[in-house]
Length: 255
Image (cartoon, rainbow, N blue to C red; front, top):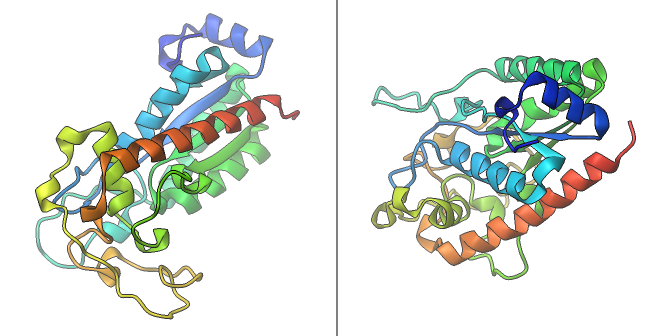
């Protein structure tokens, strides 16, 4: 089996899936404002890059689905009347879309699905979608963001990770490693969120219905000025290692 799902014939794909467990990789991203220094497709580009590299490493253990580039990005739609380029769907739409994919995979005999997420706003919807895939279609579905595996030991975080909410040094570093030609480093300026001892995210542990403008103006939150390509390469290598372990665990788990 080649890495892409859509490159297969039906006969070849179903025959392969009947012979052994195959993990379908579904990158899920977003297209939204990331400030003046990063492209709108940052989350989509990162998720798809992880899936591409993971497919190269895993070979016939996986099949790579086309990426879902449109995510749940309502928090990045501003109330002001200025022109805005963020694209967004409702969480229910994303859940229904993945349900349709899971149903099709089940019909093909593919019983494992890894949702490779690149956007924090997708997390809640993907968690529901993963449970629905298990309950309704008998598919072992996992929902993993590249930051779920923590930070590599090789780097010293320049700021607290939780405070680097959106378009900060984490995402900017990854984009410098993956697509440096799309990063405007001259425009990568500090835009930190209001700090304090609040219990509300990002300072505290409690999630709330925030919009990006509630944390900082301009569409990005964090310190992209502290990003480096070296840090991005460490993040890429670290997350890929753990994605690889996750694929192996999913393939070996009995259903």
